[in-house]
Image (cartoon, rainbow, N blue to C red; front, top):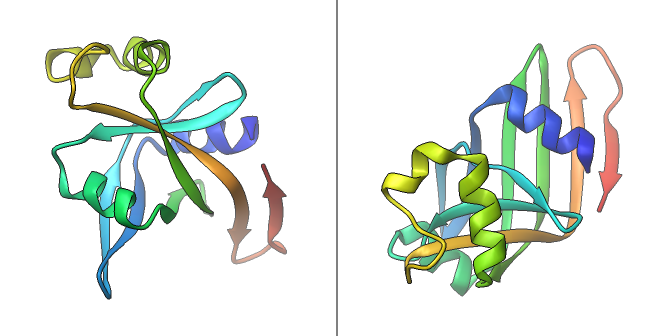
Length: 130
């Protein structure tokens, strides 16, 4: 999982795919964190992406960096603990103007039953489960 985290930090931007009914939705994200041995992302509960995740928590993200790409599939689980939110916001101080660990909007979610696949055009895919 540490390798997945490092790749996503290096890429800076990844794209998160959710579904809304039968319509796929993809948008850029930048937050990634490891807290208590789990890989976390962050968003706002008021956003459509949050509503889509709550309706169907199965997601996939994709990032590209240095000629390689990473896909992570799994189920996102909401963690409403202040400690988890604070850890994420401490890692991304620029978000503290929009989010707070104590507000009702900040949402952090961790991957459960995740599969990460590292790929490139020149190497065989490598799969990591966490």
